[in-house]
Image (cartoon, rainbow, N blue to C red; front, side, top):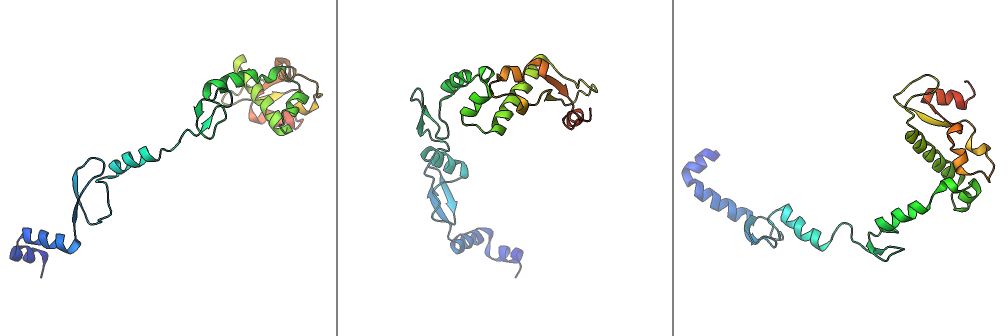
Length: 185
């Protein structure tokens, strides 16, 4: 018997009643908004995902503040050591321009980390100087900052400000930089 014949024989309301009894549809009250809703799963507590999220996120927030700032004891997120204000003050006191290579090594950093920090400061100073094109070919889409004298060639008592002096830096495109590093230019 087709569905249309079945509807005509028994009526649409009768079909709905039979469907509800076969599927065991339950009428429940939402724990968040107190609205009545129908469901086949008796364990449901909320009428929608948004109601469930409102309750669950209030009981279990994503990033609870569990730690305390190392300097001011203010509540901070667990993955951090200092609050934002203390971190800015601390970063300001970490001026590497006045430090020597040996002092930076004593901070517990490996040579690759030290050289990376020096290169980062070189890029920052090149940006402040307004270097926007390669000094060899004039390419202006992307430049890299090269040290004329390599960082590893400096003595341990050399200041970082001397290593990153404008006279020791030059803007090069990636191709010219590679050629310079491989002594082709």
